[in-house]
Length: 343
Image: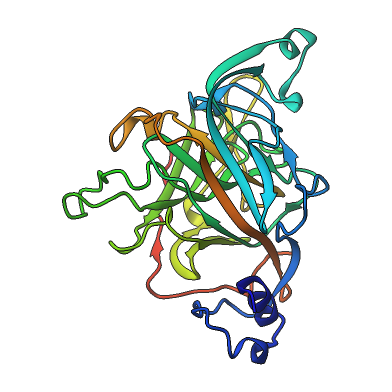
């Protein structure tokens, strides 16, 4: 029986169906999670009723070096996996994504980058407030690589980034280069993944907080598949690797403030900004302000094409209380609390 089939049966309560599997059993998750959306990537083509391709060459707002395309060479399905492929090639395309364009002149603007890749999103095809988001993936390695599994607000009700928030379920940079983690033994290869929230006010009044998860010395997320998950409820967000709960961020540590017409900021009440609907994104960036300034710095242009592989994406709703997402938490005492920032 496949890992996918066994996992789905376990979530449905059919534990006996998995008793004879040879696969290792991961730590159990909280009770009450109900599967409400999924893509197992077993089809022939990417399901455009679930995913949109972003198409732009603006570098993600982080000085990244890729154009995102909708071409099948940059993203496709094969053997039950989503392949997001970064290719070293000079490419010219629209500077902005179609939904970012505000004028005919802006629509004509072009950009050129030395790499191509893909960025897929569920916007208006899968938008949620609260839940458990679970993605099994194998990540690319090399200096300058930046795969990400994350979420953005669909409606931006509190204002532009980051007043309306950003949830990074998993990011990794420069895997398998020599780590610059001062706590690691000399010569250790980079294996950290990061869970992060962006919040506060509109840039440059934004702040971010998060924690890294380090794999064992003999493990690397670029070598095998791991399951990355985030549980989001009204007053708390939690991060997991292979169902190991490693970080928690409480609502008392985040905040949102919206910019007014006169340039002043007003702080939003309640659980803002993480109390509105968000959508999922999967992308593989090259270079940018983060990876190019850590580890070996810059971008190693050797070894391309490189791929981010995604086995599945699953979204669960807490059946105990769907309105708040509370009552289904997977909590382990080893998790660390994230301390917020304020600007």
